[in-house]
Image (cartoon, rainbow, N blue to C red):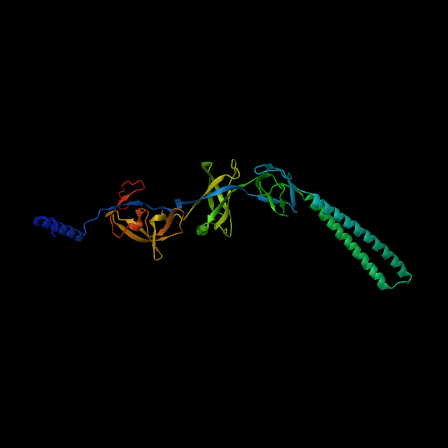
Length: 372
C-alpha cells in the first residue's frame, strides 16, 4: 500500500528555523530586561490624621423602662410610640377587679382579727378577776395573757396586709415619671404582664447622647473621656464636639461589640431622638505614620512594606513596626520616613529589586524624587 508522502521543508528553511530558536534561547539566557509593571504608590500620612468612624443613634441621657408594680391584664393603653407625655400622666391601666377583691379580702381578715382581739381582751379581764379571787392558777392567767398578745399581733399583721392590698389596687395605673417622649412600646391592651415587666421606655427630656458599638478587636484604643466628633446623617456638614462618657466593661455575646455612649457638649438644639449619627475618633499619635492596609504584609510574625527607590524605581521590602490596625490604615511606628513612596496595592506580586512604573490612585504616572 502506498502511503502519502509528507511535504518536506527545504534545507535552508530548516537552518533558519534552528538559528532563530537558538537566538531566542540565547536572549532568554541573557535575562533580557522585563518591562516594568505599574504599581500604585502613596506617601505615608501622619497617623494623627487618620480616623475611625462608627455609626450611632441619638438617644436620651435618661431612658426609663416603665412597668406595673403588680401583674395583671392590661385593660387600656393610652399612649403610643413618639407621644410626648408629662410627669404623672396616665399611660396604661390594668384590670382592677382581682386587686379590688384582694383588698376586700384583706379588710375582712382585719375585721376578723379585730374581733378575735376583742374576745381575747374580754377573756383576759375575766381571768384577771378570777386570779385576784384566787380561783385560777397564775399559769392559766399567763396563757390567757399570751393569747391576747397573739391576737394583737394578728391584728397588726392583718392591718399591714390590708395596706399592701390597698396600695396594690392603686398600682393598676401606670404613670410617667418625668416629661419626655415614649421611645418604645413593649405591650398591648389585652396582654397579661408580670410585675416589673417593661411596658414603655420613656426618653426623658434633657441631654442627648449618641449610642454606638465599638469593635472587640480595637477596644484597647478607646477610653472614657476621649474627645469625639459627631456628625448627623441629616446634616453631614455639622460637627458636634463630644466626649466618650460610658464604655461597657463586657462585650455583647452575639455581636462581640462593646456598647458606648457619647455625651454631646453644649446645647443639642435640633437633634431629635432616633436620628442616625456618626462618631469620629482620631487615632494614633502624631509621631506615627500611616499607610493603607493593603500596603502591609506579614511573614513569620514580622511586618513589611515595599518602598520604591526614587533613583532606580526598584522596589525594596523593608521591615517596619506597626501599631494597632485602624479601619482603613495601619500606623507605622518605625522603619519608614514621611517622604518615601510605598506600594499600596498588589504587593503580593512584587519581588526584591523589581522595577515598577509608579502611578497614583487615578492611574497617573508618579515621578518619585529623592528627598521629596
